[in-house]
Amino acid sequence: MNKKILITGSAGFIGFHLCKKLISNGFQVIGIDNINDYYDIGLKKKRLDLLTQSSNKNWQFFKTDLIKKDELLKIFQDHKPTTVINLAAQAGVRYSIENPNAYINSNIIGFQNILDCCKSISVNNLLYASSSSVYGGNINTPFSELDSVDHPLSIYAATKRANELFAHTYSHLYNIKSTGMRFFTVYGPWGRPDMAPMIFAKSIYSKKPIQVFNHGKMSRSFTYIDDVITSIEKLIEKPALVDKKFDRNNPNPASSSCPHRIFNIGSNKSVDLEEFISKLEREIGINAIYEYRDMQAGDVKETKADCSILDNWIGEYPKTSLDEGIKNFVTWYKDFYNY
Image (cartoon, rainbow, N blue to C red; front, side, top):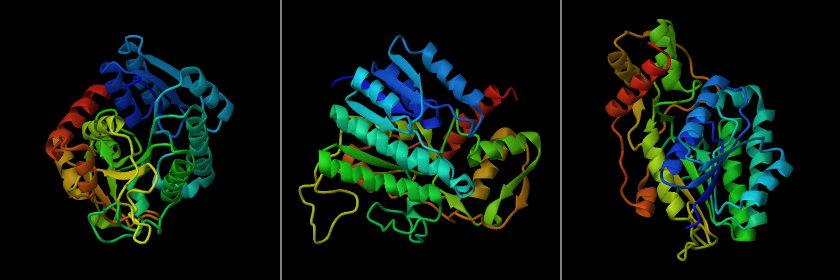
């Protein structure tokens, strides 16, 4: 295998962990990120500093934006990666309602630029981030890749579903092996400050109220970062293939007659928000202050992942317990923020 991998969103939460792991495994990693100010730029720069320090010359970084197609194309053509992993996106369900244009630019136009760049150099394997949010208004859990995803509840979810459709089309037209990864509430060290675990921890330490939406009647498929990285590593080794049993009269939404696949990457356990907060309280040693609120627009009540299709594809992989994951997260949080 050619060990040259290009990763977009490399200063992000998942991107940082993936780059770090692949560099340590001897891959040549080309990172791309625009380092926008959606959340703390300082955190992103510290992630990048760690990658530079641990790279052993297997790391190159380019600060650019996915909408700058000419710059992207030059990077692709100069370095000719055989595997591309697109993790760059404008994230956040709630923010997408306030600022939809940011999502159209990054998640739609930017992703199509990635697809065109992959086409230009005949990339062997494209992995791209989708999201559990594509399941939208579905009420039957656990969510399966065989379920309908035609009723998104946020602009963010709609852009992620659009990514899946674009990738499938390019796979069909240009034989690009592409795999969509539907991530479920990823948490752990170096996490995103706009996501619940970081928000909850900050509120507990600062002794400020935690806003608990839908009056606590919500649950999430909290998925530890190391499990996500292991899954991606295995998907790098096993690109999408044509489903030889694909039936056009009864099409399988998770596969295709072209080399395109979609997988859930998440925990098969759905944890109540109040239980998650309670475990954080115990690990931190400070009681939380609860402030109950109504459900927010674009949010969903419950997520829970059916990962049986992924398990069948990549085999068994570690699944970190919630207690262990929270302990690791809090240990990092205390150290990073000097508590």
